[in-house]
Amino acid sequence: MRRLGNSDMNLTAIGFGAWAIGGGNWQYAWGAQDDNDSVEAILRALDGGVNWIDTAAVYGLGHSEEVVGRALKQTSEKPYVFTKCAMIWGEDRKIVQSMKKIRQECEASLKRLGVDAIDLYQIHWPVPDEEIEEGWSTMANLQREGKVRWIGVSNFSISQMERASRIAPITSLQPPYSMINRGAQTELLPWCKERGIGVINYSPMMSGLLTGAMTKDRIAAMPDDDFRKRTKNFQEPNLSRNLALADLLKQIGARHGVSAGVVAVAWTLHNSAVTAAIVGGRSAKQVEGVLPAATFRLSEEEFAEIERFIKEQKIV
Image 1: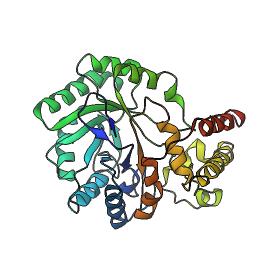
Image 2: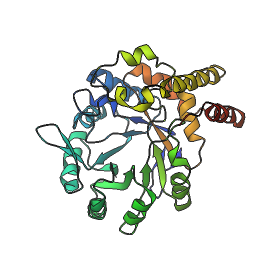
Image 3: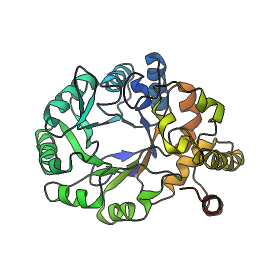
Image 4: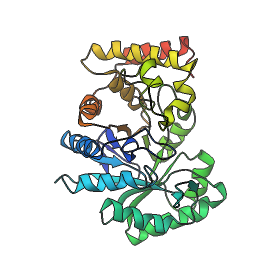
């Protein structure tokens, strides 16, 4: 367990990430998803001791929150529930980034999730930049009113967090962070650590690339509404290097009886600025495979082995 920033929440080292369970037919979908599988995945994570769920209103255009709410009704466990705002949509299903309707978004999320208060409410992206002060002021008001317990940001820069901090304290930052996407570790993570801001990183397995289960054939067969096919790390020349890295993680994991994905998550947790990592799962079986990430840690020798490979292969 690690305390998240200035909050009273002690988090398990991994949390359940609910992006993919939003289903298909929206801009950042992972393809079609069976809701029953999603509920079973959430319940397996909670049964395995995971004590927090991270979702967002925009995932599946509200559907991920609805599925999380459905799962919560089927368990006696009371996990912390985190969600995000400031990506809104209309009847045309087109996503617009705005902080003008955060209060209305919060009310809608509370209803979909079926909770009295959101444990951590986060601004999803700092877009548009000129609305940060207005958006963060609304977040602070929602916290004072008890609709949300703690407030955080996602994908913010240091300068943007400094601006928000003048209005109200930031509990946490949610940045992308993995051994393929290491941009946060130079300045962002040390800045947060120095100021006591918690960090819950997303995509520690780089959207499935580092699970050890991804292959070129599997990627080629992905449906057209799977956003990953359009990203640079799932395309050459990056793809071959990334899959080679996943093979190394398989080898390290085999020494301990864990998967490559578990090793990938452990790499991010090796950074002392990281409070906990968001780990997605689309079925109970997938969740079963990553649950060991809650306790598995890399030795310094294994961490150095991975670092040498990253440097030699020029993985960026």
